[in-house]
Length: 409
Ligand SMILES: *Cc1c(COP(=O)(O)O)cnc(C)c1O
Picture 1 (cartoon, rainbow, N blue to C red):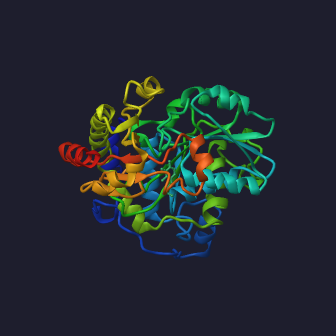
Picture 2 (picture 1 turned 90 degrees about the vertical axis):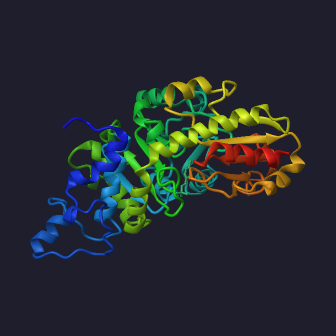
Picture 3 (picture 1 turned 180 degrees about the vertical axis):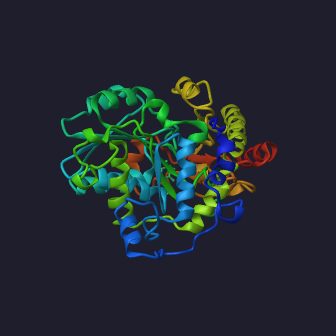
C-alpha cells in the first residue's frame, strides 16, 4: 500500500491493526498481566518465539499502538515508550553506555538532561559538553572511548540549532551512536533520520500531546546504526536482526529492569493529542514568527532569539532542515529589573514552565529552570536576569500581540 501522508498516518494508522470491535481509538488496556491457555504458549511468549503480552511494565497493547504511531511518524524501525521524556533519555544512556565510556553532548541542553549527564559522570561515564552548532567542536572532543553523541535540534532557551547534518556524517564515519532529542521540532518539523541519527528521542509530554494532561517519552531506532559493531551489546541480545539489538537491550535493561513504563491511560491521551500535531504546530509556528517580529521591533526588548528571524546565527540551517522554525523563543529585556513586572502584567499568557502546549507560556529563565545551575553557568549560556522564555501556543494572534504589547508597556 502507498505510504500515507504524515497526518493521515497519525489519524488512520491504528485501524490498520484492526482495533477491537472497530473502536476508533485504541482502547485503554487497564491491565497489569496477561493470562495464557497453555504453559507452552506462555513460555513461547517469554522466549520471543511468539508475539504476545506478559506484564505491562514491559508491554501493553495501548502503549504498543502509540509506539507504532511514533515509529511511523519518525520513519523509524521501532519505538519504546516511557513514563516521561527524561525516563527515555535515562534508559538510553544507562543501557547503551558503560563505566569507562565517553559521551559527547551539546552544551546547549535541556536543564534536566544536563543535570542527568552530571550524574553519569559520577557513574564513571565521562561527558564532554561542546558547542554543537559546529561539528568541528564535536570532532575536537573525540576520544578513543567515545561511544555516543547527544544533541537537541533547537536548544532551549537560546534556540541554537545544532550542526545536525554534519554531526550525522561525522558519527557515521566514526561508528558513533548519534542520539537526537527531537522534542523541540517533533517529527512534524524534522526527521532526525534525514541527518543520519541512530536514535530519535521525543518527550511526548510537549508538542506531540500538546494538551498538557499526560507525561510520556519515546525512543525510536531509525534503523541506520549497525549494532553488530557496537561493543556494549550484551551477548544475550546479539540474536536475530542486528538492527534490532540496540532497542532490544534498552527494552530489557531500560524498560523491564528500570521500570519507568508509560501507563496505558497516558498512552491513549497522547495518541489523541497527536492527531492534531501538524495543525497545532503550523499555527504555533505562525504565531511565533509574528511575535518574534513584534519583539524585534519593540523598544523594551534588547534581543530576540528565534530561528525564524533572518538575524539568527543558524537561520539558514534551520530553513534547510526544518519544516518550520518552532514555537519556542526567548527575549532579553532592555531593563532586566522590569522582568517580573512585565510578566505580572500578562493576562492571557500563562506564567509557567513547560513548552509545546496549546497555551502560550512565559517564564523568567534565571529565576526558575536555570536557577539551580548558578550565575556563572548561566552567564556562560548567555542567560541574563532579564531573559524570558516564551513557548507560543495556538491562541488567536491578535490576543497574543495585545497581551505582550500591554505587558511591555
Ligand atoms: C521536556 C523535555 C524533555 C523531558 O521530557 P519530560 O517528558 O518532561 O520528562 C527532554 N528534552 C527536551 C528538549 C525537553 O524539552
